[in-house]
Amino acid sequence: MSNFTVTLFGKFSIERSGQRMEAIRSRKVQELLSYLLLYRYHPQSRESLVELLWGDQSPAKSKKYLRQTLWLLQSSLKGGNDPDDPELLVDDEWIQINPSIDFRTDVARFEQVYNSINGKHAYELTLIDFKLTQKAIHLYKGDLLEGWYQDWCLMERERFEIMYLMLLDKLVQFCEIHQDYATGLIYAAEILRHDQAYERAHRQMMRLYFLMGDRTQALRQYKRCAVALRNELDIKPSEETTQLYEKIRSDTFDPLSTTGERIQPAQPLLETLQRLISFSNELSQMQVKVQKEIMDIQHTLPTDQ
Image 1 (cartoon, rainbow, N blue to C red):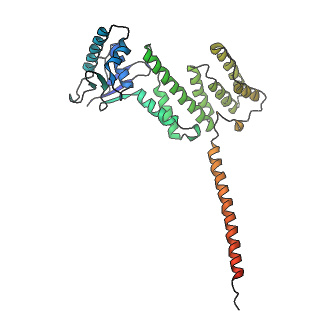
Image 2 (image 1 turned 90 degrees about the vertical axis):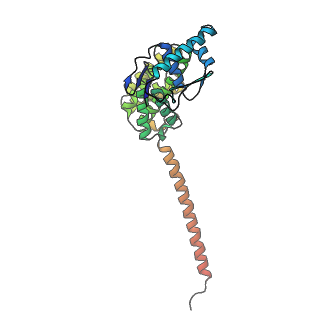
């Protein structure tokens, strides 16, 4: 049975069993396949697809275009598979990628990692989580379907870009917690490459530079932040950013006092230790009480003659 590998980050491409498929060249065929893959476990109605892909055409023309595009897609995907197990499930009203067919997409793998990491704090991430997140961001070779400007594509592109920035942010936090400051700077810079006005990343870079012993670059990063915010949003840095700058400038910044953004990895351990100390104290008190009761009992017992 054939398997398909589809790349949607950056330039669209598709391979069957390791061989590039040149037959799928039509932009509309690529668009239909991409949309069905993004929602592969959700059947799409024909009515919604014609509105989505040919909304500027008359109802008769848009339905005709869908039939033609669907036929081209089905013809291109055929090739060695069981005819009773087609690549697309199609009826008079609904169209869907066959869930039993092996379609591997970069976006699916990327989103799977995001979903596994999203609910965790940075201090909860394991080294395995860190490596998986690194692999996920390497899948992001470009924005979703670069060069496409359909409304649905723009919305999906923004959704994946937000996920990408959030994963990068997690990597920066992980690097700061584990004192890998140079790597953290690389990931923070990648955030700013996508969004110069991402103020949180500027603060992260200021801290990372300072922790590396480069106070000058930390102060310069604040200046870059101020320029980016002024140029893009016509605003000044937040009070939090300004306070960080003043502490670095006066050389009074204490990384251990940072709260909010930089989650202290020792906090869960400290809470556990506190509970153990409390339990130990209670145990000691119980031990003293039991010993006293034993002594009282011994005093009441008759002594040997």
